Image 1 (cartoon, chains in turn cyan, brown):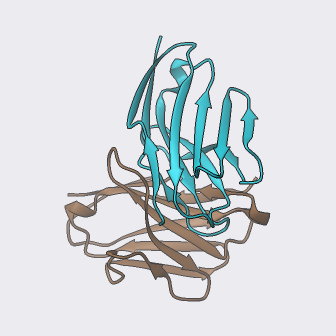
Image 2 (cartoon, chains in turn yellow, purple; image 1 turned 180 degrees about the vertical axis):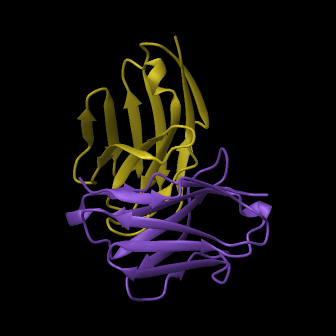
Image 3 (cartoon, one colour; image 1 turned 60 degrees about the vertical axis):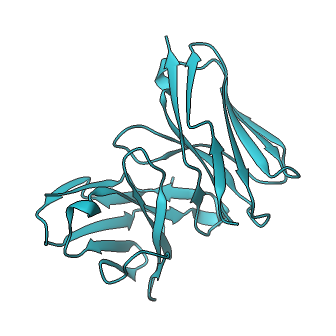
Length: 111
Length: 115
C-alpha cells in the first residue's frame, strides 16, 4: 500500500513538445504529492508539488494534474527544452513523514 | 529557504573501513531526518528515519549495525557506514521535513565508492 507506480520508464520528446509522466498511488492517507527533477550526480530538486484539495497546479511550464478518485497524478512539461533532459521522480507522503518515490522516468528532449 | 548541508559530497574508502556522512540543517531545526540510498539508474530508497534524541527507525532489510545513524542535536544527523564493502557503493541522500508542512529539504548527496 506504500507503493507509487510511475510510468513511462523513459521518454523521448521533441523540443517544444509536451512531456507527460504519470503516477499512481494506493495509500489514500497520502496528502502530499511532489515531483522531483534529478541530474546525474546531484540530489533531487523539487519541481512542483500538490495537495489533494486541488486538481491542478501550474508553475511556469510545469503542471501537476491530480485525480483523487483514480488515485493518480501526472506531470506535464510544456514546451519541453533540451535542458529539461533529466530523471523525474514522483513521490507521495503523509506530510512530514517519509516520502515514497516512484521508479523514475528518464526524459530526453531532442533538439 | 531551508537548507540541509551534506558532507562529504564524494568519498572513496577502502573495503573494511568506516565512513561518516553528515547532514546539517543550517537555518532550521530538523527533529527528523530521512536517509535514502540510490543505486545507479534506480530510485531513492528509504534506509532509515532518525529522530533527535531517540533511536533511528530502520526500513526492512537495512542492517542497523552496519548503517549507524546518530541524531544527537536538532541540527545534525550522521550516517556511518561501518566495515564498508564494494556493494555499499552508492549515492546517499538525507532529507528533512520542511517547516510548517512545507515539503522536504534534501541534502546534495554523498557519492560513496568502496574499493
